[in-house]
Image (cartoon, rainbow, N blue to C red):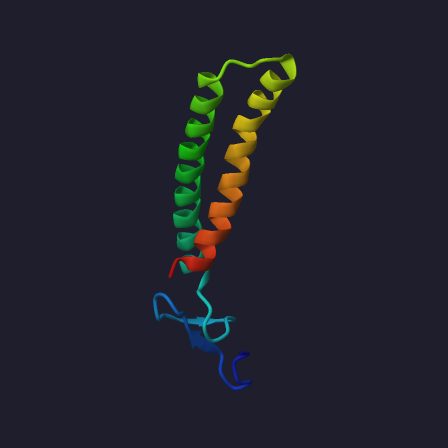
Length: 96
């Protein structure tokens, strides 16, 4: 919802500080940066846990062929990237 034409400053949703250039229901730049940092930490930790689990699973099963070995080698970093992106987007949507 755009702010009315006569209003210059609108309160931030998170810190309730009046900031110029945002609409109702939005966060100021400082709050957005803080939230992005929090989301990045959560996504990084979840990705590391998932990657460690995938790496342990790949190491626990000996590869039957070179193709299986390459699949395991590629699966570990792919798991990190996918989980980090997915958890990051979910956290950005679900965190207050």
